[in-house]
Image 1 (spheres, rainbow, N blue to C red):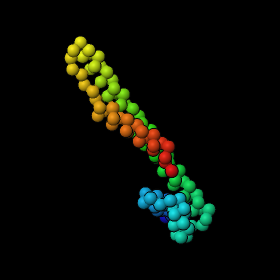
Image 2 (tube, rainbow, N blue to C red; image 1 turned 90 degrees about the vertical axis):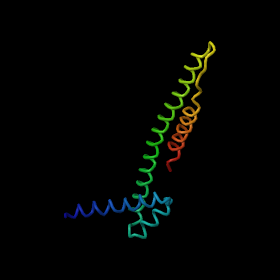
Image 3 (cartoon, one colour; image 1 turned 120 degrees about the horizontal axis):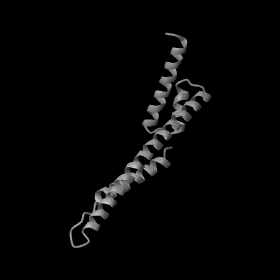
Image 4 (cartoon, helix red, strand yellow; image 1 turned 30 degrees about the horizontal axis):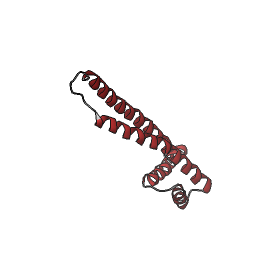
Length: 120
């Protein structure tokens, strides 16, 4: 294998190791200290740490946006079903209050807000 290929593999291994530390709940300082103890220089350890945490924040933001969208759809859908059945029952019939969809949607929406704002 070429020297470039070996370098690419080494870089990928460092990033995989740093990502596993982040998944284990390590802080920025702990990740950087671990990388330094593995033989990386100060600048490289700082770059890898910064990049890993930026990737994590981006992933949280994307997941947060999806949760907000799906939560809003569930909540609005539940409200619409409730409103339509209530309107149809005005003359003395029964109607459905879709509490489950409304509450589930609101919880999922606000979970997404938290992910969007708290990725780091």
